[in-house]
Length: 201
Image (cartoon, rainbow, N blue to C red; front, top):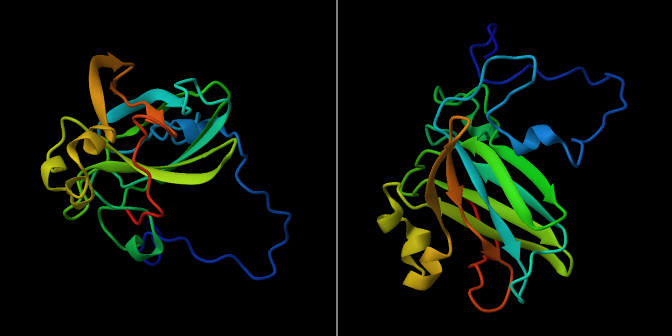
C-alpha cells in the first residue's frame, strides 16, 4: 500500500522514463508457484496452499504434445487484482492471481492458494490453454470439497457429467504444506472438458 495516498496502487512513473522494457519471461518459473513472492522474501499470500495437477490429453487420450496454460484467480478473500479493486482492503499485496506454465509432455503441476468465493461464484480458477492445432480454449476449474458448487451459475447451467469434468478432486495428500487437487483436461473427443467462448470470472 502506498503510504502517501493510502491506496493499493503505485504512483505512475514519469512519462520520460527511459526503457527498454521487457515483457514477462515466457517461461518464468515464478509464475508456476504463486505462493512464493520472491526467493529472497519470507512473505507470501494469505490462504490455503494448494497444488493443482493433472494431464492435458488430446482426442486420442494421449498426452498433449506441448501445451501452454495460463491461470487467473481471485485471492483467498475472493478479490481479483484488477484496476477496479485497487482500493479494496481485502486485496492481498502478495498475490497477483496470474500464473503461467509450459508443459512439453502434457503433465502439469501448478502451486497457488485456494481462491475465495466471489459473489455467487464458487471458488474457481480460470484456465486458458494453447497447444498445437488449438488457437485458444478457456475453461474453469472448481474444487470438489468447497461450498458453493451446488449453486454456482456456470456449473448449474451444465449437465451433471460436464460438471464433473470441471471439478478437481482432492487426492488425499498434502505435499510440502499444500493440499493436492487433481484434474485431467481433455482437449477434444470423448469426455471433452467443457470449454467456453470467453469467460469473465
